[in-house]
Image (cartoon, rainbow, N blue to C red; front, side, top):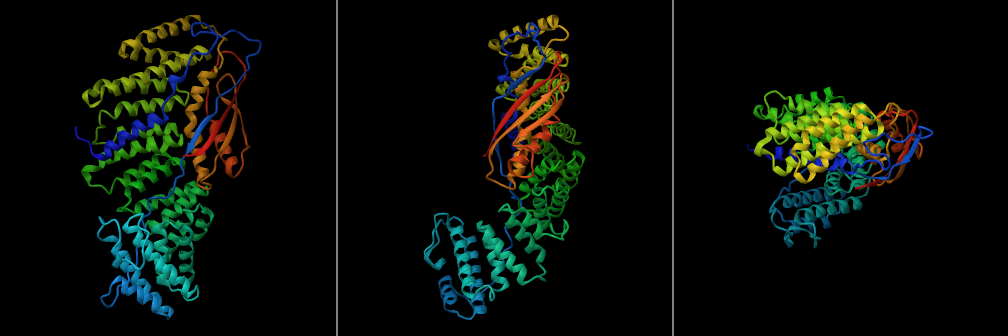
Length: 562
């Protein structure tokens, strides 16, 4: 079966998600003291306290990337000329209006020249006014030359005499070359000088974009004040979406990015737009039905009919894996992957299925749902069985090992906490995988199966507590939720880092009854991250424990930008 490059990228995403965010069963070892074949020793009090080793969280600073460069106004010379002649004309012209007109012509010539001869690494002497810094290549050198011409002329004529075309050109060059403070100044001046321009909404969009790139999110929102997200103005809707999500208006952000997607059917940065829609869906708490409607009704519709089922499958799979899962929305992630596999008229590639099904199993481990996780894990093993030569032998072996280790984790949880919900899933996953393991691993695995069955016979009612190793393996799986909280605040301060401590208190049912953080929850910086983590942690669940009492756990996270 032949796969497109997009399909290969999807499979790569599936594998990479598992590599980066998969389970950590291999780190789980039985607790010291009681072995899995005997219940834990009774203690005077059922209360337990322990501290989990700090976890490093690397955050990504997400930026708007789907908006292409501004359209470049082109001002043609009335007579044939060369760049050196036009350079001299700009220098010798004194009258401000004419000087700016000649500068606009020169900037156009340099811009056009930058787009020609793409294989040339350096500008020739007759292509520019001065000796250029060509270390970044011919195109960028010529664009910098054009910008410098406009900057010089703008300074010479002064703010009062500067005209709209000079500002429009400057605003575009500053965006293209990434000088966002200078771009902000140019677009703001242009709006002030020509507030009734037919292109006012476009100008405001680029002003807000320049502010967003500087993380001046409140200013960007203010620059769009009074405007509504409309698919007839997709650029404005797009920057409005970013301004809103960074300032906490999640519903408004989704409405705006949806308008941008509807209006940008043929955007040249379509891949970036699709990726950001999925990111907004995950970080904006967008329900699955709303996200699916936009994917199926808008993003997929732009493709030719024969491609639509495959495109829909890929987009829904990415929604589950890179939209919801990377935001720590495990239920929605698993449900999105189910929807991907149910796309009418399309059958998922057989080498995707084992990874998709195991990803769903891994998601539901975090939900304290061992029976559901085991069901997905069994489907992963079944998918391996029918994959044939579409799956590499080493990939099959690795996934079988992953499922076995999930069973091992469930075994340890059952043996230490006496949560009977974990026994049968552990036993079933052992039965399913042990015969398929390599000979070296099978002997130890068979011994673990015997220990599990012995534990069932020996376990007494009223025994079992939360074990540090097992609980650490379960709680550390929530790191993507912590990362998501961190990355939201990086949208306001891209250099923020530090340490956050999280204290949890659980009763014997496994429910989280108390949450506190250091620093305390607040509105900004580390306090805002702490508050977000605390809200997420309130919904975490630990296994039940057979012995009455309270479990107190301290976790800490070292936050740093990638």
